[in-house]
Length: 398
Image (spheres, rainbow, N blue to C red):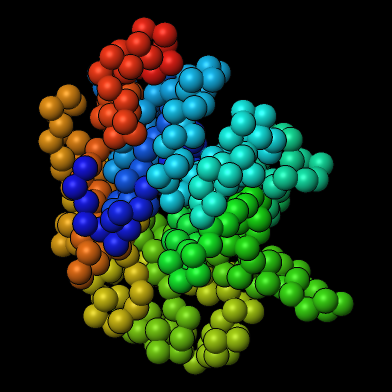
């Protein structure tokens, strides 16, 4: 694999499954690291979830680009030995088993550090190593429930908590893990020491949600109601042509702009809205007034007026519509890749654009065991040894 990204030369052994771990290591691969994904012979669960196209699911595809695939039977000592040989040359090892599982497999932090003292060992879990929840299974909705996210999404009328319809805790944990690993690599470069990074999904989400979401609890003994000043308003407005847009005005200048765009200068002198503080105190009335005016216009025409008056605003796009959005096209965010196995593949490019060290991103997710042969050759195994391992069902290849 040829890659000249900012993490070029870094080797990552990826023993993760589902989303949080695989997405984290995918970001490292996008930035140039050689990520070796270890899977059981039957493949990890995400290869079986979602739309299947000739053996590749969209769920696996979107979390595992920029990697190579090696299948290993880790219930066989020979499989464990191969993994430990890979760790000899690795900079980073990532696993997201429940606490204690990696140790029982002989792949815990202390064991692997004997092999590679400078290893950056990463443990991703739902709740951490201790506590009443530590041994429980975890999926994204569980963290949404415990972290306060479902409370933030609570229905304003019924007061019933709601889940976010996307796996925010998983993906936020992935980004946090990738950032933490990059920092640990920097520390290793400066000081020559590896370390153990422990990352719990619940910790990630509490930290992520605290600004705005829980900040009212900051002053001990003077706690306020976290819902009172919550900024996450449902700024969704229906237009005359039955489309939906969003628009907002925080500053006085933006409020002036929105009133001018709607030709409602009377709202500027309305005592309920003539200062930012008053607009917050009367947010329900303010939003009702805006909604009433927007409903008189077609989406395109009112958005044009908002833009001319420098009002933050946008159409609310479906996920299908965003592909054709002019801004998205200008940014070249969505790319089309050719695959000899699956035909044309649509995927977002890595978001960060580097001026000197280009990102990878165009290397699609590997087939199950696609790189087993080459990876084993790289650690010194010959053709006869590899074929024997295939026969013994220690590894598999395509």
